[in-house]
Image (cartoon, rainbow, N blue to C red; front, side):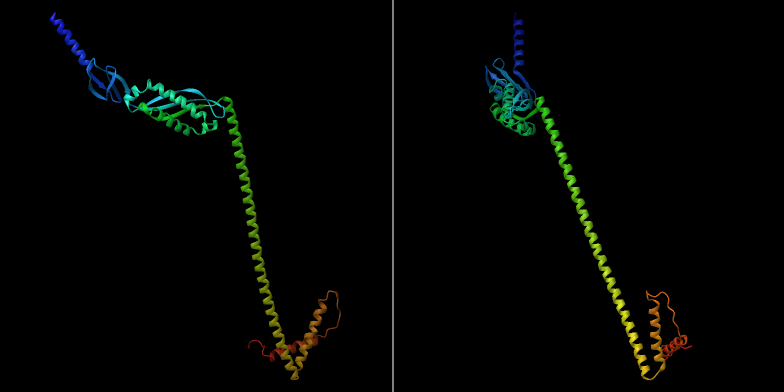
Length: 317
């Protein structure tokens, strides 16, 4: 009998010792209750509690957790019915508060997310919902995080996963997008044609300017050429006049000295000029007149004699 009692006592002590040993894994925290009242929090590691007096109350995960927000229908500010769903990332920072300040923590956070999702998105137009998703996420994060702070929870992120407008709105938006793209394409095409016309007009204007400049330069060169030609012509006439004046002076001097050859020179010159005018006259086709060859030869001999006396003889042999 005593052996049985000792065996029972031994078993009881082993069970009691087993109940008093608590090992908390990493990323978890356990609350300890004594007669149903919170007493302490066990962090990761080995712990000992008083058997039959203390017990583990709640096992709280201290890691960041993800909570899926179920899909729901939301009426926007412009009375469009859209389906939305989201996801909430949160982390327990204070295990006792998360265990005893709220019942069913995950359900409470999910209800907060759904309620505020309807509130925030219901105050916006459909276009704002589709184009300002980051603003929606920021507003939801601020509201839900403030509401869960007394529960010892930190909401790190709130994301709207999907926004599903009605099918008729999707079709209308597709048509609107197509019309907007067609309009943009027409505007770009018109701007391209306008730019091309401007460049073409500018090129034609530049070509006209260059042509005018070239014509002006050509006229300047032509004027300079005419000026140079006139100058040379005047210079030639001046030299010819000087030569004629010199010849006339020499002949006059010879006549004054009584030189018969000088008189023959003048007679022969006038005679030849008269014959040239008669030959080149446009009204005369045929001229028959006696020519005294001896007089012409004599005049030429007189011219040679005058030239010899004037010192125009060629180089001596």
